[in-house]
Structure formats: C-alpha cells, structure tokens
Length: 89
Image (cartoon, rainbow, N blue to C red; front, side):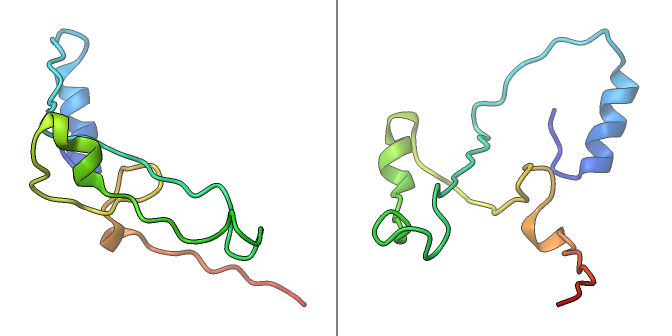
C-alpha cells in the first residue's frame, strides 16, 4: 500500500521484497497538471487556465480531498524545501 511518507513507503517496499501481489488503489489518484507556457511567454497561450476537476472525474465519483504535491508527487508541498542558488550578476 502506498504511503505519502516517502521513507516509510520505501521501507515497506524493501520489507516486502519481490514476493507480493500489487492491488491498485483507485480511490487515490496522482494527477499532474502542467501549463505549456510560462507567464509572459506568449500573448494569449500563456494566460491562466481554470480546470474543473469535478467535471473531469465525475464519471469516477466524487472528489473527497485534494493535496498539492511536489513535481514528482513524492512529497507534500508543505514538506518541500526550496534550494537557493548563489548567483552573480
């Protein structure tokens, strides 16, 4: 079973070894949304977009909760530590 705590999930995979049966959990879905254009990159194509997730997922049932994740989906957004880079201008 997937656990959003990455270290716990990795440990469960190691403990399980190669002898296990995978049963997908369709009650939990990772959806990655990406805008193709950065702000100001194109006069119209870089405009903000609104996506109605209820419309997209209505055939599968109701959305019970949402959680913003890191780009890879591994960490909760509030757990992500941003790096700062020393730059010279």
